[in-house]
Image (cartoon, rainbow, N blue to C red; front, side, top):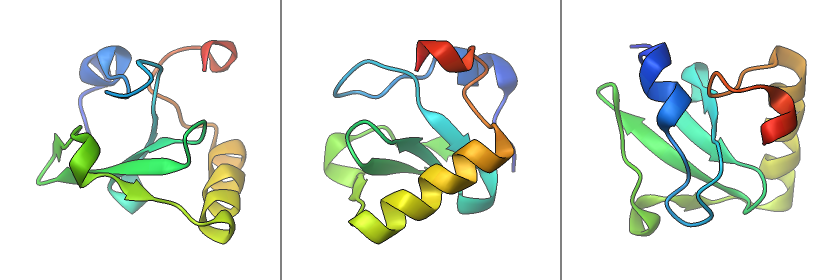
Length: 81
């Protein structure tokens, strides 16, 4: 289930208050700055620091390449992330 584009425009990381990358195929919202991702369960973003997954270097690099390849973002211009 895809997230509403209007919702994606306002979602930010609860820790650094910056935009998140939405990866629908991964069912997650990604913060490359902090190296973590937040799950999306049943179409609902779970933006709780205790629920986030810390990424190891390999996974972080893989997801960064995916973001760059696909150009997916929260709906904000890439220069704001």
